[in-house]
Image 1 (cartoon, rainbow, N blue to C red):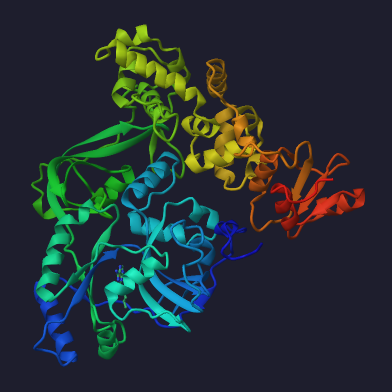
Image 2: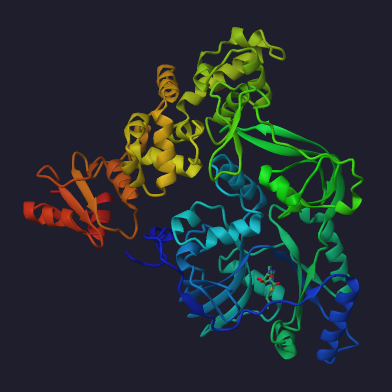
Length: 627
Ligand code: IVH
């Protein structure tokens, strides 16, 4: 059952204190860089001279240079046994538990080759990166500067569950070691890529085989233009000699192979002027400054505004209204001020001051100790209400089709809603009084709002916009507590026993439910018919088969390898059983994992049947006896 390729091994047990260092079997070299066509031609001449073939063109392959984190995976007899970061090229860190959580990385490849070590790049797609940062912004966590940092931060997590929750992907492009194989590993790089793909590893198919260096240069020009259309970042291209024998013959310097080179794209930065600085009021009342720019095209898209985050950021960069600034896209996605072109100052620039009052409701704003942002704390501020509603209706929350920021603005302005629960009272007649609504669109919106009543407990929890509670945490809370009522009643201590809930989140949840207006909101949602329970169907096996633990009471104790505590309890409920936390005479079974303590002792004392993890799994699968 403890097969390393078993799907249960994708998420492993406990966070680690630190990463083990691992010695790479072969050094993970780096690459030299070329920045223009001339440097590429010089590289080509060195290659052909080195091969004694100055007269003949040599075929190359141009691969995308994925901007992520290098990893080396070891498969023994076809099973993933180890994954390591590049580190300094000689020693890296053991990130096996984290790599296992990536769905696109096979735990078993299509070959029993005794030893295969492959090299590749783990990355985070651009859209997923933007969504992750949006979620972090909403929950007050520091943002990642770019997808590469987000990928690195996600992979170097001591708790693999965090990695599992991050949208990471990978591409593999090199075979470092292949031992004892009957299989012939191809001697041509493009065929090697296809070979890796046949093994089941993710391979980037956007490579191009070029007959000579001029075709390589064409390909570089093509990707410099087109790279923004890719769903992930590349920071250049890698040009490799197609012939692996040639690569071996040319050898390498201390740092890099002579037969490969990286072509780096020129960084795209543009100059523009700060026309004004505005402030926005966000959902948790955060007052954030935003620079309005003279529109400028940067790396394929027009930038006319850029976030300035907070007062300290503006001070640190010394950004003034009227300044000329250098703009780039951090990680190719998010526009950012690189620096102020102080040499262009005329003296007419104006310092920006953060407002002392909310720009919308005119109430005083506050800056909490240790926080960089100013907040409007007026619960009835219209701007805060609008942001709350936008979040409530958004795709990851209640997913109300057709209820976007513009319509929410209309509803708020018309004073039709004062909190999210009021949405459920809106009628077709109400909407018909507003501009831009016809009968059909009004009916559709009312239907979409009504439909969202069944969005599910996890979405409702997320939709409430509790600070620090993102999508993933909302799902965990819903699974653990199974009803809004139980969540509302949970103490800070109980909340902290939930995996993924730390002190800050627990505190935030308790203070949210402690506020009278939030209690009223939940009561109004319930009265409106919003489903605040985990759906019953979730507790039944998908195939409608018999429930193996029907009527049985189980206690889980100690650490299991294939389940977290809440997953094990979820599995018990799905199988028709009841999961409780203390052992008594009414307990039918105690599932004991590693380091089980007093509950196990008590079970022995009471003569209750004790199951190890394997027996527990058998029971869940209807293969064991419950009598
Ligand atoms: S080949 C011996 N191919 O770029 C060097 N590297 O600056 C083997 N990278 O950290 C590297 N995509 O991990 C190669 N298609 C690709 C790549 C690639 C990204 C990374 C590589 C290294 C860096 C080199």
